[in-house]
Image (tube, rainbow, N blue to C red; front, side, top):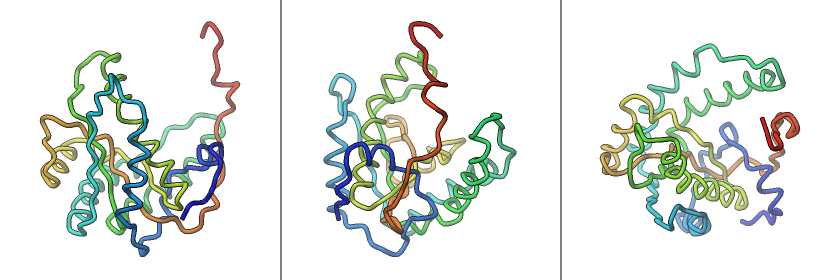
Length: 213
């Protein structure tokens, strides 16, 4: 299914989908591969293409990944959240409620994705780490955009990476932990409805600087 959205519509309505993930509708592998073929057109530093993409369909492995995720997510979601004194504060309870729903139901999604990139950047200068993640994250976002255009959704989560979680996930999936870095854990499913809208964001004028800070 292609929604025939314009580029602007895809870019402005691709949301972090949690409560509207359809747990019961299967996701064909060929659709995932279509999205991945698109994602692989994203830029990557020096054309290294050091990325690998680990899809998880096995229910026992999905449950194990969800358990790793919950170990970190539950205390984080229960903790008091910072306030900003602007429109973001209005959205915080809704975001937390949505995130808690995903935390409780993560193992039910048809597919999970862990994108990985060859190398490690712990303790390296910011220029190195920016270039490192910049060689993977554009492709991950392109993958999410391609999902959206086909009536699927996902959510960018990273909480499973905290503590020993990344290593536990690597051992579970056979990812060489000493050679590859994980960028996140992405639940994938068809969405319940496709009528997503723009999110409420701070105005661009409030975030923009010209020639100096």
